[in-house]
Image (cartoon, rainbow, N blue to C red):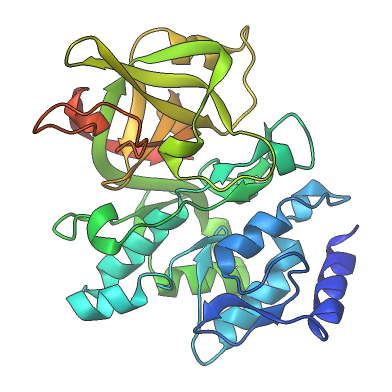
Length: 332
């Protein structure tokens, strides 16, 4: 199916089957034949399950929808498919009087916490899409879904900065804002040619040690995932012995398909693995080459496994068990 055919089908079906694309705060409608009320994350989860005749058309195929969303009264904007206009957290932001710049950073951070759903992906081997960023779902030929969100207070420290900068082709940087996202999306006078998709930001980075599980371990409980018929499995996890020889695991949700002879497999099994602290709840495992990092997977910091043993008066937050330091990150 071409990108034009895909858009045409979406709009034609939307005439008889309407669900909100972004919940109740926006008026754009499109079809979701298998679900009721929806939002942007669930629409992307559905859309990325589809197979396009030209995989590079992934952004163009929904560009018309995004353009409509950006021109409505309650405009909504994105950068490489990741939202920067507050949606899910809007009421919390208003209640806690969070500054606009902080709202954008938190919203974008939440948008980075997607993960791959291999069972529903159009191909069994998850690979990068050339020319697209690894930090966005558009950079992978895979079905994806967003993370469950507990609350603004639980997932984010409002005293911290969540700023992101976009690296330009001349090496300079510009802060990621709604205005910049609009300029790059509209691309008047080919302004986008002056920018790369590389993000620059400063965060704490954990030095993890992962254990390889050839037969896999269940990670649905830890990540609060909703799945279809198959149990979500992970082959890599951070392992900690706490208390009286009690073991606990934090599974890694891999983004790419990794085999035992791959370079990424050796990296994950040998020595310290870099994990960027995106928020209080989520970390992004990265692999750095030539100064630029790429996304490898997502990990939840605080276990939600009700069967887990917890030390008396303690926690099972991953940051309590591995060293970390503040670092500048270039994420491509």
